[in-house]
Amino acid sequence: MRLGGRRIIAALATLAFPASLGAQVVKPTRTDAERLEPYKIILVGDSTMAPMSGWGSMFCAHHVKSSAACLNLGRGGRSTRSYRQEGSWDAALAEAGVPGYKRTYVLIQFGHNDQSSAAERWTELETEFPVNLSRFVTEVRAAGAEPGLLRPLTRREFRDGKLIDRLGPWAEKVQVVAAEMKVPFVDLHARSMSEVQKLGPEHSTSLAQTEPNAAELAAAKTGTTLKPRPAEEARLPDVPTTPTGPHAQFQRKFDYTHLGDSGAELFAKCVAHDLAVAVPELRSQLAP
Image (cartoon, rainbow, N blue to C red; front, top):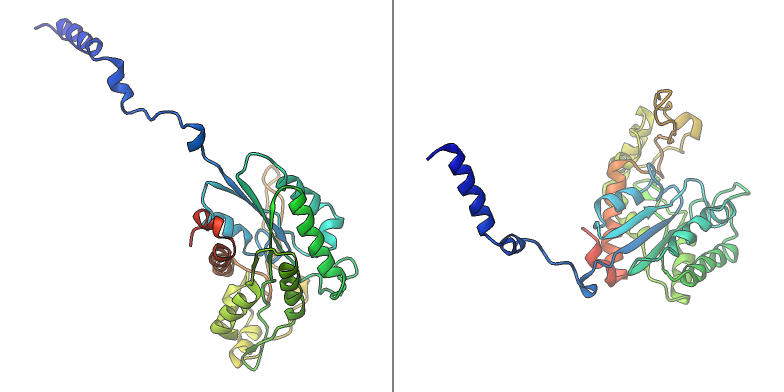
């Protein structure tokens, strides 16, 4: 048979098979009942949650499924007062009100900078701090979203091998507000204290953004960490940039508060596990 004849027979064979056979491997369009109903998780807090210095971005990247949008709006140096005053809270509320999600959760973690001595950050412990938290909760609900509160991440300062807890009073206020307003809460404070105490003063230095210097490491080995270096002394030089490339810089430094990749992963995993307990509806959206 000539080559031309084979081509004609192949063409006729193709026409002989109905298109319906090909349709058998095409999945039907989802019905309304089967349509994906995505969730949304918004993180609001300070530097211990923020990108490049906290656990939040690792949580979104490694512990939240693609069926849930995860947005880290944590910002360094912010308290319950300054986060609102600068307009960051307005942005978070706007995101909380975006339609199209089965449910939106706003997870809120503050305490470090509310304790600060800086006038623009500090909040009064007995009245202002809990009132600010309560207002956040009320406004999240008014936006049609679900609030969640997290007790603040521990610092990693030790004395004689024992972890020092200066954030305890602020952590307790978070729990009080959560109970009074019937808000799910994650006790990241207690969980992180347990994890850091197990690591001890020397090994917990590996959770920081950069390595300790010789004096800091030697002190940690004795069981008592040094006083944190001034911010400018601890900060590494800016990363080189190009005229047409990204120019934003993040502070990278060794201290006993902020997190590098290993620290962020450790506490992101803790949050994922404890959030699944606190908010059962999110279990299907969280990865261990």
